Image (cartoon, rainbow, N blue to C red):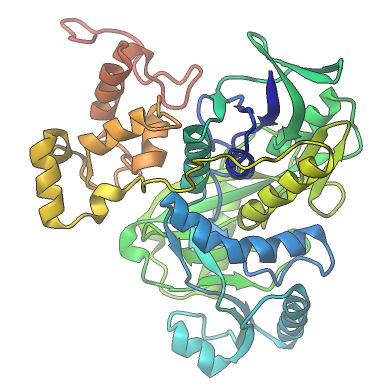
Length: 478
């Protein structure tokens, strides 16, 4: 029996789990996939939005601004990269500039600090590669960038280190409320909990429906991205937006915390909640629009493309409410990543207001060692560590200079990596220019050795995504 079961191990579910792990509660996180942060959290721009875009008076606006102010400290505690690079919304004509002024006024009402409207010359001074057709911009110095999947992984790992449990491959197919207790079942297992938090992203309407709540609908909104090599990360220093439309903030150009350049996303409503495929049309749109916004983007340097599905709710705002001890945290589209720390506090207060006792736990540790701590060491410190543990001196991924020791750490540290993608999103092994072309075989061997299994059992991302399918003649596969 758990006090709280959280359905969904994305950044929102992870932040909620971390917040609840501060208290004397038994908390369980249920995730249908083989790893955490596999949905919208993984295919995300990584932008910490300042808070000028969300409509005044909405829950989305309030939690966006609160979360933006919290994010630096949260990332610092969890060892997650955070860069306060600022954001720009650029305009190309009088109509755009009118919208920029409206965004400025909205941001002031929402409580965004230090907003400024820039002239053409001011814009070109801080962003030399901006389109020469841009005539001005809204500047939000509080905008920032993070690694969204690292934030989710670190949040869940910190929650687990403080007592929370994680159950992977737990696809919820039944929720029954009996005797003041929720019975939550998958095909193979059941758990019981006094309270449930539904943070299931694009599937949150389905999960709510299992509990008898059909009050909202989630539409998946496809967003495609392109990622450029690190040699392109300097082309812009700020996150560059166009003036937004009703379907979002448009195609952006932004550096990432890892030094790459990210382009996207598109914004297309679809029906299939599992369709994360990229399309020729979507990628062509990205190529066309980014070149309208920023000059000198070398599109020949694209190293990968990917797609995420945003959970667009039918209410137009975040859906965070409670009924009969069941909390919906749904429709958390952009700026959901930014709002996640504030959402966690908000949900904890809702639970407290509904008779869940929140007694602070002695010994709660909010800190976590950075996943990339080895790269942060001085040469002297690295050599000392290599002398103590030679695995840190064995480079597995040459593109990102990831050592075997770091991969082993990822496999042994909560939440433990058990797939090739799991290693990639914790260490960046396979995330560089060759996209795992050289390091993947070594990663498979290390996973098999550490997990005490055959290389034939190692998968890319769980399920039927095995890397190797059979032994060839004279093979030495374990």
